[in-house]
Image 1 (cartoon, chains in turn brown, yellow):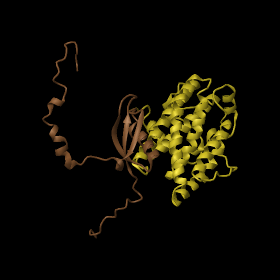
Image 2 (cartoon, rainbow over the protein chains, first blue to last red):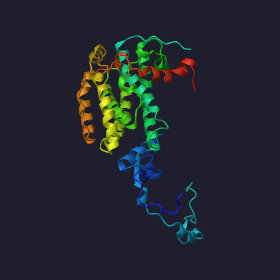
Image 3 (cartoon, chains in turn green, purple):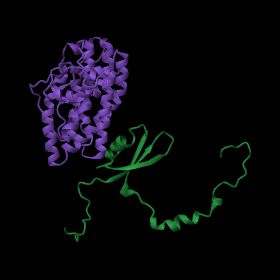
Length: 105
Length: 257
């Protein structure tokens, strides 16, 4: 077998784009990411999301976003992005004296 | 071995079973796609629809059994009737064919059922009206989902178009039966149980014409062929599908999960 050939950069026509699926369970709540699926276009993505992710009454609204349209932070930046917050406990509102009447904050 | 039940040939019962059996048999056919659909997501979509249809069949068979008054429940009616006591339209018993055949049949039947449920929501029979109110939402989605596929395949590649056209030619022959009036229909219309199916012909053809037009497919010409499933006379495929459906209940009478 010839393994020296470069893989072609073009997406094969048989591969549908990937979509990220967000479902809102009830009015007033946020859309939550629940998974992804392949579909040819937005209309099909919405329908298939309905069939795959809301068949147990999970949803009242669906968003779909093409996965390649999502810009993500670089995992290599994790150290400088997130580690400095480790010792900044004062950013949590846990140092206030609450009146006794206020329970369960 | 469980012997067959004898069905009272009551027109109201037969009217309900035409719809209920159409749902039941198409549900069984769609279930055959489980594990075989072209993509995983569509596999789930088709089996969702199969379960919707079986759910509609359960409600209608239960209700038909009550009206019949012989103590038959949904399981008796689903699994213990002889072939000629099933009144589904012939189209739904045809083998599942390829994916084009399946989605085209789905859109034809879903359009019919949607129009039926919309009218049955005003039935003089309160139980039937309630079943229809729930089922119409399912049928609307079935129609939309299948119609989208028909448009994609009809207006798709040369191969998908060829298959869709071939399915259309075969399936269209089996629609004529749906809109033929008979005493069962006339009585349902007269006592407010439900519409004459003949009255659905025009809206059905209009909705189908719009979908086929989107799919760049021509509506086939009418033919003299008439299938007769609604009267209990079925194609050669019916016996086989009933054998698959009934064998468990016949071999282990009253068996449950």
